Length: 364
Image (cartoon, rainbow, N blue to C red):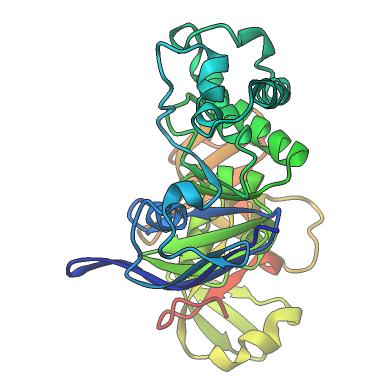
């Protein structure tokens, strides 16, 4: 078993605190992704699990063992870095086998493990090549293979796809997911790319300024964010945020800065009623601001917006507009006409709204 337990872990560099007493339990064979903007503490947390950074406070347990004072080589972990760090004078086979040779594994066992990893990663035809004869994606697969042959208790990935172009990133995301399905080892993966996090993770850990904002399955974080930060970080394009005032006028409404009142769906009225009279923030995703239809479902209201920028994306069109100086995005059908400077009628699905407390930044 290889559970990873991070308990009240802190990291400080002199007067600067990078990680503020975080708690996280990672189950055996679980794929957990730490995601957040640069400087949020995700890579520092990963390096503390690996033993590459000393912790300032707290405890880290791997497979039931306290590893605070255990050196990296004895933690039975394998790490894949953003930099492939391959030996240029060695073949693919030799690069993948190097760590096992250092540990005095028998030649037969080394060959068996390398051949199996090469089969999983589709590297068998490349075993005799040197790194200079490989593409970026192939080099990253070799780096993964070097980790796989170790058969560690835990895989650690530190932004492994950052150096790849967009197409290769998508391909390698699929490769990594396939590898985890074939070899379900406990995995902790760090990225700043929320799409990577959503597509790879069993659970996503959203970090901000050295703290954990929310932990949960990707769909839970997407549909039920706990804070404004999570709501705005998870999802592409980002969630729209409107300043509103909550009104109770024979029914519950949210009033936009331009005076327009949008009715709150009845199923959400009890939840939001205590906030009547308060200034709040309304959050709604671009896919819930769409073109209007002749027959709308209950809870959908119409607004008209001045188009600022139109971005055709092929299967969809992004429309950017301003409401009282606040930038917004809608996602509409490409067949709908939208042009800068014109007014565009939109349908807002209030069934998907989020109301955020301005004092706590919590989603209510």
